[in-house]
Length: 122
Image (cartoon, rainbow, N blue to C red):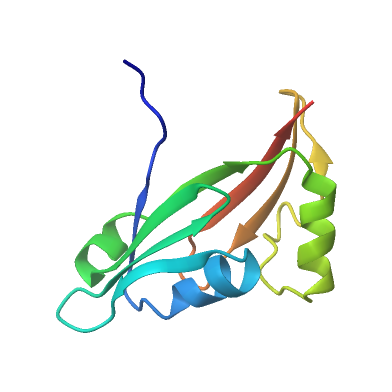
């Protein structure tokens, strides 16, 4: 028996904000959606990385997560996003930086302060 992956659930006050970061910026695709109702939600995926995105104002106010995505080619991904003229680079980590803990990293930050750190082991 083994655990296969972590699938985070991210809460938004306005689910439309997720479009900027995960769909338009990072290129995730919508695998399932329930956009109507009291708590709309989406399941998005890219390269086998799956996220659940939920609209729930109460939980969004309680939790602004930092998510880490690991890649095998951080420079290519950064160049891809720069080429798209992405406006969501984190102000504290907009470029690829080699960290003292042995990872190359850059960051993204959406309008609701959900932070995504892209990392690559060296």
